[in-house]
Length: 187
Image (cartoon, rainbow, N blue to C red; front, side, top):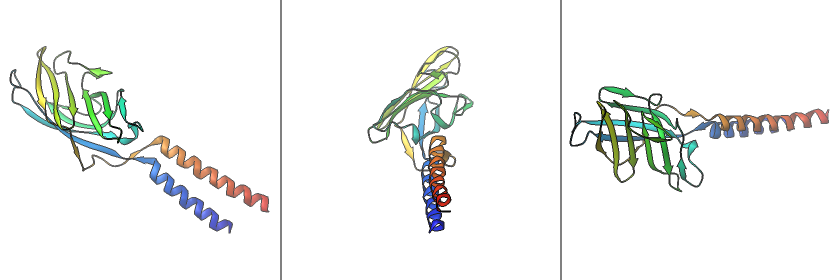
């Protein structure tokens, strides 16, 4: 009987570990345009970014924090940016967990601005045009951004969720300790 209990505990622990140790990510595509005036007028660039779903507040709301993008692929004015060279200003989620808006760029901290050559930021919104601001030679230009587009293809593989993995391993260790304790008392 104890062997069967141990098998059930291992199976349960494995299910919990697989469900909680890896968090899903959602990817989005966006397209910016250099606007009507300036040296990059009419220039269009498409990019994509990924957000780990573990950051979504349970009842929705705004998350104001650096480093919320787990992946970014965007090229503007001949420079390619990634999640390590651009940052989030904030992201905002609906009560259902859908991304309502995202603001990020290479001159973002808590909030975003354009304060020097080649600085830029994007403000994205679902179902309506967003905002794109960029600086070329210390002159700020604005251009449109298409609506936020969630894409079905993931960028990269599943990401390890450290808190979920730790919780699952703790549960598994606790259950194993209970079975081991019962076994020692029975002897």
